[in-house]
Length: 260
Image (cartoon, rainbow, N blue to C red; front, side, top):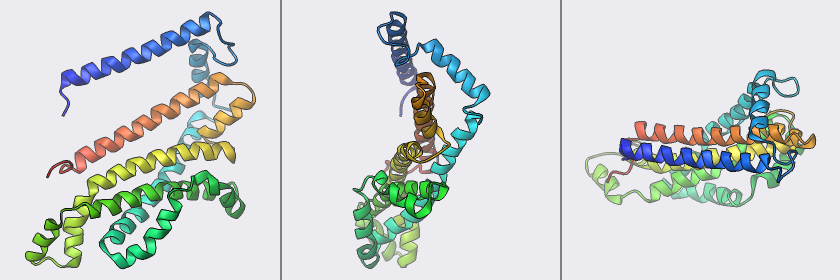
């Protein structure tokens, strides 16, 4: 566990890095080494951000684009959690179920999600259904594999001790297997959120008329580099906050994580 002094030192180091990047950025733009079309000045990006937050983009408030992207990710990841965790746990705990489910997940896992996005568009159109299904398919394998491997890594003595005390099949699963798997499952959920988040931006760039990803590709058509940079910064900060939230959730609700 990090001490307050270490936390302060880490925060100071990150602040210096950010200030260094901003300083280098300002020096490059102020000396006109790069065209302002390719790299606008920090002040221009700041003004673009204020205008986006105040007036929106192409007549739509910025927060609507932002929340729509997060909603797509949230619905897909939540569905992947509901489906992937039970499938992974039961597939590892029961060899019969595993022989049916595992080959399907192993087939989907190495395929880049965008490879079959065009098929989903042909089948479901460019609406929300194709995007949410794409994100679901991208988030499912990491969660499934984390749950599957978690069960395989549980000390067999835990099961034997529970059985010797009279626990039946389902009691062992609910009171031993599931709690012991949660730390590894949360790692899989973090990976799934990152996978879905990067996929939705790419999906919005390909076939969409709304969302943060669509804003980036639309701004690029009109050389609105300042808008593109604002969107990229917002996406980066949002991704960091999502991962931080998941870490805090795991720390507070899975308190036995890391303990023998």
